[in-house]
Image (cartoon, rainbow, N blue to C red; front, side):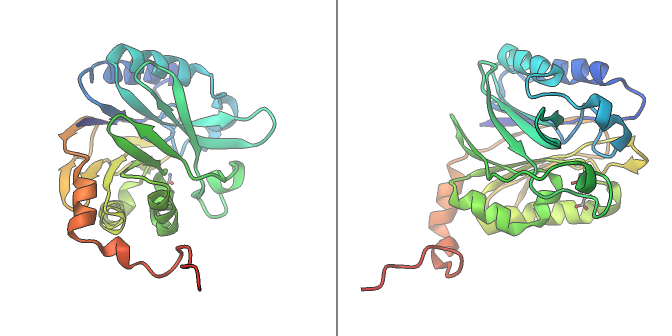
Length: 265
Ligand SMILES: NC(=O)CCC(=O)C(=O)O
């Protein structure tokens, strides 16, 4: 399969609608790929907290509109990164959107672990409650977002839900780039799965982004890694390598904790 990670540059100066149009053109240009991935909160900026109250949008808002059309035009599965979702009956959420090649919005995932400690996302956004996987033509995607990468128990739960390709949109700062690379590889090794981690480039909200989107195979090998700036990272791999790695080195068979106990007779 072929995957393209669009490491979009996000600034405070580009209006959201212009960035939506630019991102949609980049998605359309990936015709021939099986899966296209965008970063976290790219329409407004993952650290542009001031823009969130007015820029939040519903699931059928402007980002969904342009991304559905772009997925359909390119004929690709599209993980369109995440938006600031306005829930009419609740708080705002950091919500990822997955579109099928016909443009239908088939899965959404509300980020579970909110970043910021006592500020930003952790204060103004609601926490997602559900583990989400997405069945596709080429395997089962496990959905996680940015800071979620630090919580291995989420990835173990995704494994137990059948995930084979872990897709992680992010707005990960340059200051902690080493963690980004290390954790992406760790999650791939632990779950014996592909990790496709699509980060943001540029600077917004005063936070320089790390870039360095990365694709890791189930053995922890880096198949492709982007640089610092805006870039489309394209990589080809065989999703069947997941089953092969799990059979060749059956470490998951030796789990003792956190799995249903055998029936005692
Ligand atoms: N947007 C985020 O979740 C940032 C996470 C981060 O900066 C970190 O985990 O470090």
